[in-house]
Image (tube, rainbow, N blue to C red; front, side):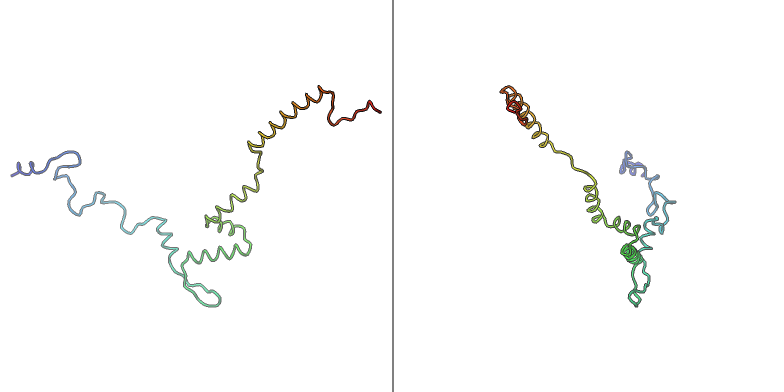
Length: 149
């Protein structure tokens, strides 16, 4: 009978012997993470999703802690608190992303483009050729002729 079991199951790569396989319902990591442990970020998210009661416009309202924080940041930013304003801008990446390039564009002075260099090179090569021709003819451009005086 043991010969028949050996023939039904080949032992090899990815196929351990039956006696060393995990039993049904047994974990590969018995001392692993406890079932209720979810990590710090999950705990913070769960805490921000919990509800609190706040007084708004003379009445009590139940909102999440995250919503209360957002209301506080916006209110402080509107009162002129620069830290709250910067925190608000960092929280909204779309708004913050639009403002940063505008500020950087104002700080940078645009330089000349390649087309400008081509125009200047053509201008100076043309004027250098014209100045030598004018001097050869005896005409001076921009200078008064004092021989008549």
